Length: 195
Image 1 (cartoon, one colour):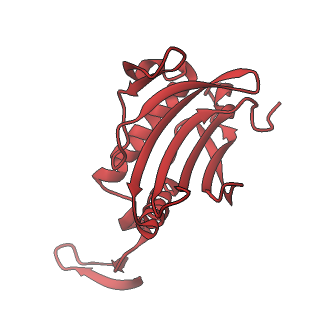
Image 2 (tube, rainbow, N blue to C red):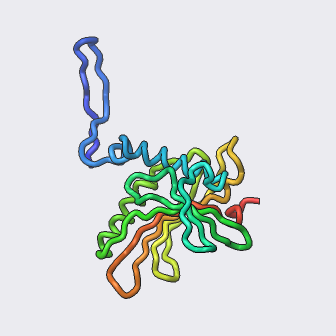
Image 3 (spheres, rainbow, N blue to C red):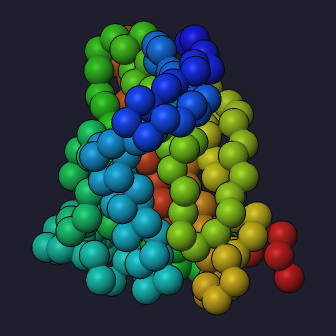
C-alpha cells in the first residue's frame, strides 16, 4: 500500500490543493462498495430483529423431528448459505439463534482462508445497536472462534442488546480433511457482565 500526497492544481479556478492519492490495496478501498453495504444492511437487519427473537425475519418452518423446529431466515448475508433460525435451551433460558454456513470444504486450508477472509469483512462492519468487542480463541474441540460481545448499547436502543453475541466459527471435522465455517447471531443467558 502506497499513500502519497500530491499537489493538485485546478487551472479552471486557479487553486492549489493537497490531496491523498491511494495506490494499491487499502483498507478504505476494501471496505466500501455494494458488497459491504449489503453486508452491513443484512447484519443490522438480523441483529435489530434479535430483540424480537428473530420473529420478523422467520420464513418457512422446517420440522426436523417431533421436538425440533427450525425456520428459514428471510434475510441472508451475502456470501453465506441460506440461514436457519432455531431456539435452544441454555442456562435455563430459551436462546434464539440465527445460523448460516459460509463454507464446507474438503480442504482445510481453503476453509481456514475463508474464515480469515470473512473475519476481515466482519471486523469493519458497524452495528446500529451497539459497540462490540472482538475476542479470538480456540475452544476445547480445536475450533477457532471469533466472538463479538456487546460493550456498550447505543443510547436509545434496548438494553436487551447487552446479551447479543456474534460468533464466527471454524470447525474441522474429525476423521477427515474437511472443514466448515459458520456464523451465529444469538443471545447469551447473561447480559455479558452488565448489571
